[in-house]
Length: 298
Image (cartoon, rainbow, N blue to C red):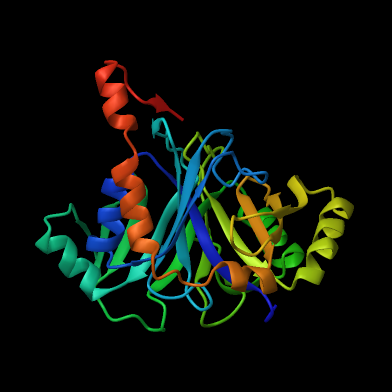
């Protein structure tokens, strides 16, 4: 569907400073915007937590035409347990490989000019030592599935994604909404998909008028809706409508109204400063150290 866009993947982070260093200094991404919230998100954007949290959008360019990452930080939570659900993000960037080497950030060579590295918290990235084949260096997000054909039916037949590649022998498929957008790779694994507490969420946009139709479709097909259509407010910015779905393996999927999201997601030139100020003002590490207590594990 040409009117749908792949937007971002949501990660939970336990250490904002180390995570910001990885995305800025190793991957070479930019802080596009940073927002602080006093209460948990109505659509559980920050996970099942009710307290103060923040959202930082980072990427290689504006959200209008780049796939980015959303880093959610819950104050007081220092780490999350990873499952086997998220298998990695692939980025084509010779500069990122060079940055990692200069900073002595751990790299594992996988062959064919591809290197595996991990963000703080353990999320995997695969860096291709080459120039990007498209304007956005972020090429694909890879998720684990337990039944490839069942997942393809969901993502292609229900959500309207085009199947670009399908390899029955390797039990993988590549899907997307447009040739020049970040793709979604589904890879079958033996056994059950485990999301643990570090699970993320992939987000797409569509015209706002399609959101209610999408909700009706999921109801007719008896598919899981985690959060029915709801309006989300961001202080001083546009209000957006979203619906949160879950695929057959429980991967969380956000669809947001495109028109309002384009207003909400404009690059904030103060993004870097807002993030750095928030990190400097966050005294939770010192408080827990003084109390001789560890931060909570999500």
